[in-house]
Length: 66
Image 1 (cartoon, rainbow, N blue to C red):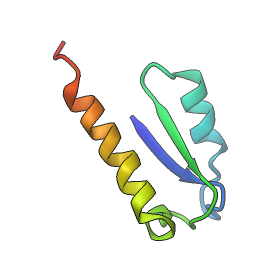
Image 2: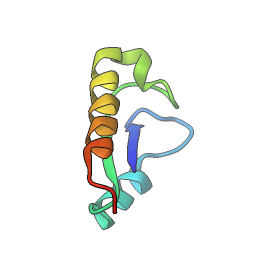
Image 3: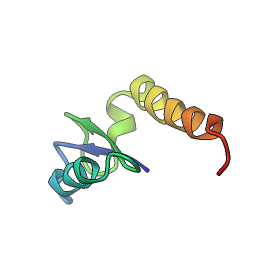
């Protein structure tokens, strides 16, 4: 699971997302953002967002099935 969550999210604090990633690094990866309101991370840095999400998808798809 990939979680992209901003420090600036005024609706949902990112602390629980970061805690989940810390508790289960085997299945959860957090990508904290400094800017970006709720669900607006792409708007603040589209190139970074696309690199992070695209890289994650590539990584997951390249894993052997099982």
